[in-house]
Image (cartoon, rainbow over all chains, first blue to last red; front, side, top):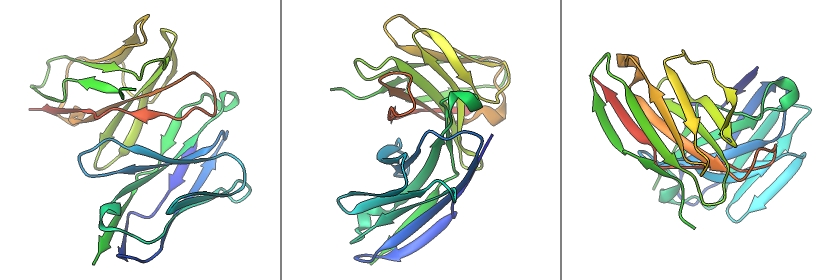
Amino acid sequence: GQNIDQPTEMTATEGAIVQINCTYQTSGFNGLFWYQQHAGEAPTFLSYNVLDGLEEKGRFSSFLSRSKGYSYLLLKELQMKDSASYLCAVRGSPGAGSYQLTFGKGTKLSVIP
Amino acid sequence: KAGVTQTPRYLIKTRGQQVTLSCSPISGHRSVSWYQQTPGQGLQFLFEYFSETQRNKGNFPGRFSGRQFSNSRSEMNVSTLELGDSALYLCASRPGYSGTDTQYFGPGTRLTVL
């Protein structure tokens, strides 16, 4: 099975940098996804990591260490519109059962002026 | 390209009733997954369909079922509704059935059971 942990809530200041951590234990691994979800809306895709290292996409970056079962999402130059929940999700592998995505419970980020 | 669409967007039912939710994937996408989202449990996987076949199923009772049609559209059904079934039901589609495909979510159906 899969177990995914991320902090429940975080607060950061507009213009600052924030790092949201995600740790996981899995019986199969086919990549880690980050999604953003604004209140009352659908999750939207942010990033996908399957190999170790950092993936940068504009103000957002995501890092993966498979040996440590660890990922983080880095948000730079925070804007008020970044206030949302950030969901970490791990995809399993058929050898461990399926390709299904297992989600963490999400980190609610509040950006304050 | 149009995104994933779900109907209806909001639904109110009473205990014991049944409900059917519909999902139309992004054009060309052949895999559809369903999730239940509640404040306490977060996003929980219900099932995934690819080429009209259920490929995976989450840990939900048999009251939750689904199907996929030849045009990749999918429906999920919940029978004998319980208060605890009140949730946001999200559908997500992806192009195929591989390890690297990205899932894209629809806006969800908000189900309230009274």
